[in-house]
Length: 121
Image 1 (cartoon, rainbow, N blue to C red):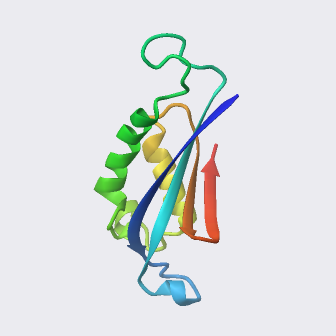
Image 2 (image 1 turned 180 degrees about the vertical axis):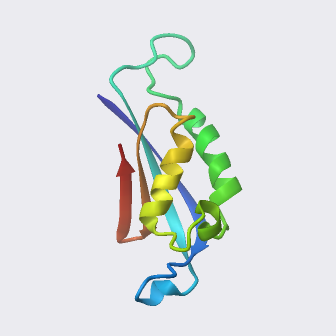
C-alpha cells in the first residue's frame, strides 16, 4: 500500500457559538491541512509512471479550494454552521475534495501546533 501526503497552509477565522470557553468569541488560526491519498498500485505508464498521483496534480485540486473558500475566510460562512469546529471543517474539506481526488483517504487539520483532527472513511 502506498500513502501520498501533501501539506498546505491557510489562515482563517471562525467562532464556536455554543462553546463554553474562549472559543465562543470570534478568533482565527494558522491552519495546516494534510491530505493523504492511498493506493495499492502505481500509475503503470506515461509521464506519471510509478506515481500514486503527481504532487502537482494534488496541488491543482487542493489549492483552488483553499483560495476560494478557506484562506482568509470566515469558516462559519464557508461550511454553513454556527460552530465551525476543526472536526466539521475537516469533514467539509474531505467531502469537497473526494470527488476530484478518488484516492483520498484522509484529511488532517491542525488548528494549532498541538491540536489536530483527522477525518477519514
